[in-house]
Length: 208
View 1 (cartoon, rainbow, N blue to C red):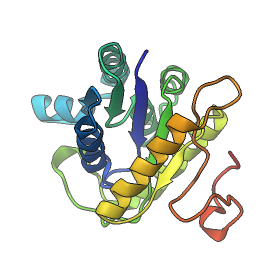
View 2 (cartoon, rainbow, N blue to C red):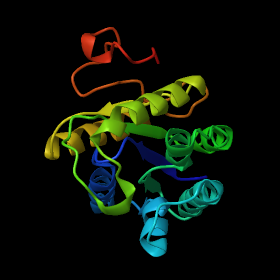
View 3 (cartoon, rainbow, N blue to C red):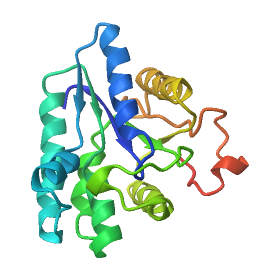
């Protein structure tokens, strides 16, 4: 992938789609070639009129990865409204199936920045895809655990409206200007207030 790839993760109703489109629009206005990759799971559910079966999860994850790679080959910046990792997490949450994690994490590791949407937005219903507010905390925990196992860093997005977008933009700007040891940008800041992973807001997060 030649583009700078930003991937949004998060439990349901945490503003991933809103931030993906808003972030993409801001970067496009700056003159960059930007692609916003939609969530294929939503397209699948809308088309099938149901949620996927366990045997359909792997194909959905693969298609999400394929679309991100295709966009990255043609643009300067890709903003992905989720990755295959979210399919792996939901397959684990819904079916107890942990077989999708390895491939999903390998694909996700090719992203340049992971933005994890915090649970500070109110839950809202949205058709077939949302199970209820009670699933958000366990899903969030599974995302964090998977990223930690793969040693993939992430930035947590907090805030309402424009504040959340501003935090996303700050994360992108920092990641694109702060290279890690192998020369690839990597984001280390975990919230909009500070970079101290020891503060009480980060007590459940691994050290990055």
